[in-house]
Length: 139
Image 1 (cartoon, one colour):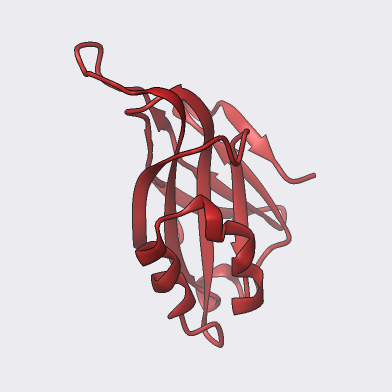
Image 2 (image 1 turned 30 degrees about the vertical axis):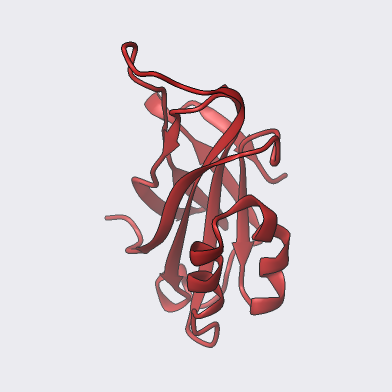
């Protein structure tokens, strides 16, 4: 069974940052400014409102794509060998969908209990997509 989490926000933003898939782990409010320009203001405020005494924020980014219409959704979290494994496939736009050209990046922000993480936020993470394909990792 995976680690439970609560979605705080999910969207797509125009812009080229972050360029590559990445997971940002925020164990305190001071960790959040890194994602401020990458997410919608309402989602950033939701992350700021988290009680960091008992919870952490995990922000998952698909990386910049050359067209709009992509999405990313966290399906599962687990701890393995001290590393947070985030299963979050990147979904392509539908073939008949109308997308906008230019750089866009999909993301999802979630809240997770520190207790459910084993009492502390891991420093390392691995992001996997469909079929367990590794999209990115923190060494």
